[in-house]
Length: 216
Image 1 (cartoon, helix red, strand yellow):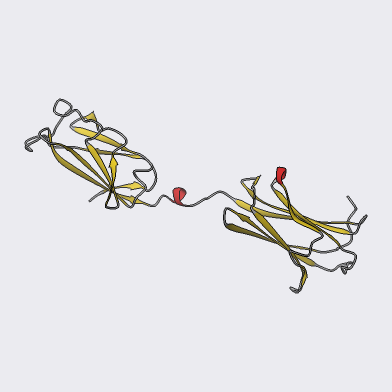
Image 2 (tube, one colour):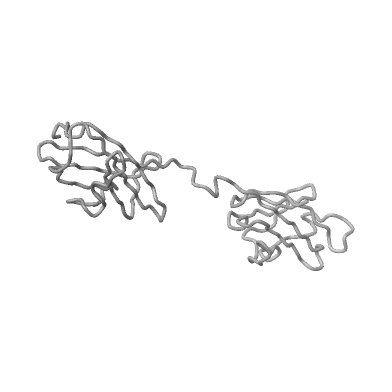
C-alpha cells in the first residue's frame, strides 16, 4: 500500500533500497546519490529530476524530501536508479486533500453603510469587502435601492454620483438627491455587490426611519 501525504504540502519519503544484485540493503558505503538519481512522476506524467537529492539517514534507510510542487498531484511516484550500484526502486505516494491548501478559510465580510444627510437631502452609501478586518480592492461594485416589498427605487445606473471607489480605502460609494423619496418611517433595502478576483460578494442591508439623519 502506498504511503499517504497531504496534497500540496511538502513531505519526505523514507525507504530502503537493495544494493545491485539484491542480496542486502544498501547503506551509505554502497551508494552516493547525485542530482539525477531520482525522477518524479506526477499523475503518470514525468515531471523531471527530484528537486532534492536522496540522502542516507541511517539504519539502512534513505530519505527523499518532496517539495510542495512535487506533491501537488493525486499520485506521485519517485523512481530511484543507479545501474550497477543499487536495484531500481519505485516509491508511490497517494496524496489526500489538505483542506487548508484547497480552500480559502479566511473570513470575508461585506459591509454597507447607508446614511442620510438632512442638510442637503442626500442619501450616501458606502460599501466594501473585508478579509480578516482588512478592506480589499474590488474590481467593480453595484448598488441598488429597493423598497421593503422589493420594488426597485434606484438602479445601479441611477445614482447622481457613483458607484465610485475611494482607492485609498478600498471603499465604494454612491450618492443621490432624495428630494422625491418617501421618508418618515419607510423602510428601504440596499443591495450592494462587489467583484473581487472574479468572485462576487453581496450584502443586503435594510434601514428605516429615513430622513432622521443629523446632517453629519
